[in-house]
Image 1: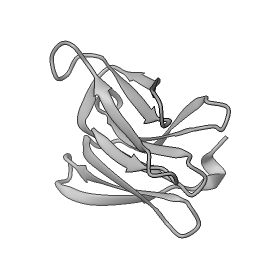
Image 2: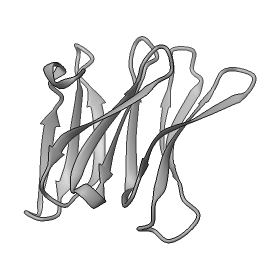
Image 3: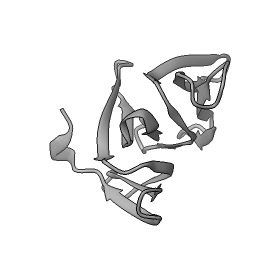
Length: 133
């Protein structure tokens, strides 16, 4: 699970919801406290997950989540539109990746570090806004 606080200090959490083995399909969930109740949303469904998700909330209270799709050997980035729709995109693909960690730069662009299991190294990917659609 990953925890971030919004501008009001309310918690927001990303986590995996899985009821069987570690490498079976799972849903990546986002849950947010609005002051009176928890709102739970599914970010995406993946076939084979890593154990880690990383989330940050930007200055406009928009959540940004990074995770690894182990079935496709991809580092993924997801964000939520103001209307509530989640969008996921591949940040890096090709190596067995694990343990993403994310932060936003001064302009609000996500940067993601992750462990490249294939090459045994720590990698960094800066999100390119031109890739977003």
